[in-house]
Amino acid sequence: MTLAFLRNPATALAIVLAAGGAVTPTFALAETLSRATPLIFTGLAAAVAFRARFWNIGAEGQYIAGAIAGGGLAVYFHESESTLLLPAMLVLGTLGGMAWAAVPALLKTRFNANEILVSLMLVYVAELLLVHLVQGPWRNPQGWGFPGTRMFPDVAALPLLFSGKRAHLGTLITLAVPFIAWFILARTRFGFTVRVFGSAPLAARHAGVHGHRMIWQSLLIGGGLAGLAGVIEATGTIGQLMPDISPGYGFTAIIVAFLGRLHPVGVLLAGIAIAVTYIGGEGAQISAGLPKAVTGLFQGIILFYLLAFDLFTRYRFVVNTRIAEH
Image (cartoon, rainbow, N blue to C red; front, side, top):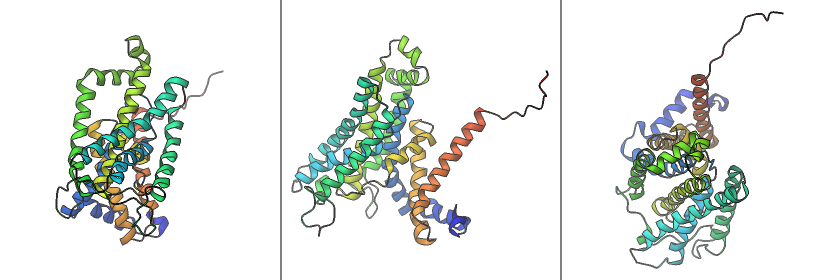
């Protein structure tokens, strides 16, 4: 891949690993965890639905919807000093993501619409809505014409874990949520029904599992997680709403979910690994002069090798040398 850009692959890989935290521990580790936060949340959002055999491809739109719902509260109360503002933003962000996920759930259960197409198309609706808001009614009047809202008040910012680092309280929440999700999926009745419905839907229906209810539950949980990721990113890392609030975290969540084998703890580890590619890709752009698209290519190659590994472990090629008898 790097040879196509006339660059040394070994040098580019060393830059990616160094910038991702393999060499510089303190700052890069905090930056990696900060980048991993939205990836883990959106990866869990996709994994929960995938475990129930519903293909929620719209985590990106639910992420943006959550950022709009939660961030909008800080825009309207930009002079507030209430400590209740931040919790209210997190709740509204979660509800915003759930509301966005409710659309494909409704169309799937009522009209049997394809959830892949519906959730994917809603991503572009959310993106256009965000652009309209930050360039229109929510634009910062003191922002010199740049698209973006007012900066959130101090009470709307997630506290930092380390001074001068971008790791914040949302990072700790992110590290805890996968273990909570694992406990729910592995030790509760709801988790058992999700596993059964995902592996044998006909048997689950005969056992009394309601298919429409499972659709609503899995999509709403996924949408809530993605929406929470959006508002955490807005309050913890950026501090305002901007058109490019996401570099594609919701789409990368598909890679994170499958790289983590749809297991919550696996998603945690996969999210951290993919975060390294984001930071390392930026380092490769600066140090090696590689284009921004290399990050996406690197992530795509990881998914390609993962799928190839599954293919060769589940199937084997057999050459039949016998001549058919007539």
